[in-house]
Image 1: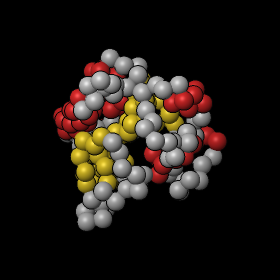
Image 2 (image 1 turned 90 degrees about the vertical axis):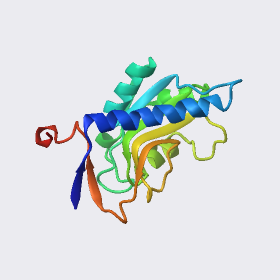
Image 3 (image 1 turned 90 degrees about the horizontal axis):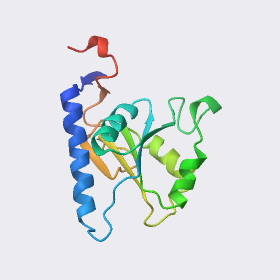
Length: 168
């Protein structure tokens, strides 16, 4: 499978697109514009764009460990970090932005939504964003920097914080 390297400049451009969509979305409801109380970076790849967003938007950042590399839904205790207080914040009405580098299959976002009981909620206050979304994903993020189709163009996306020693 070919590797597609994403530069820091491209990362910034993708994050700016996500932020533009969030701003545009919040302007649709001027009576109650949506702005995250905090951003959650999914460990590992989501931490970099979440940190960048946090600095730019001036909102706190937290992390959530959900690593599903073992297979769909097969996790050990070390693979998932249960942050029950985040689930409580959802119930309290906090606006939460969950940010990932790539929404490849949708399994990470689906796992979080199942764990937090969000799939059955209407009008909840959790929104999702990713720098790159695979159109074949089983989960659609609210805000997307760029969409690719890995069925038509199989590729492994390499962000600048991954294999940084190989990038020029």
